Length: 225
Image (cartoon, rainbow, N blue to C red; front, side, top):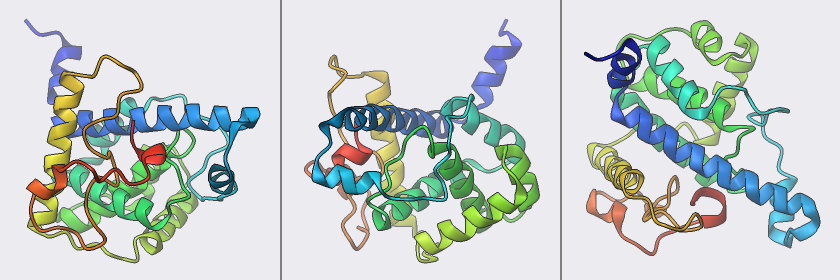
């Protein structure tokens, strides 16, 4: 007989677990990079990135893990599984337009709650309002509203997601799932795909297969592990 905890875990869609694992690994890697920079080993490029100011950057690391946070969003926000794929797409678009922003433990939670909020409004017919999402995310309504506006401008209000683009990002998440099931032996090994800015060129490709081609690791230090 399954325990209650096992039943709860089974109820979480795979896309939630995969996306949280992906982002957690990216954040951890960028935390290490930031620590190295603080010890005086930064390059000119990374030094410029360090000066970037973002509304999503917190002063301290949240106590809750990325996985626990995304599961909390799933349990209380009532979003469809498709929302998490679309949130991933929006997050990729946002980071493409702000290459100086590296996903780390200080901003990943705010990026997640904001990208999911934006996605659920576009994908689902019925959704909770910003005040509810703010409570779920552990931030104030004023901050939630500000982050949403900043995020929308960050993606240039590019909210449309074609079926082909949706399928391409699903393919990337499937590759990530394979990576999680069979991780490389070295901690420094690179995932077979760029995790966020994966392989889509400036004009998004119209086939899922193109998303998994190698040789497209943009901004590897920022977004791949």
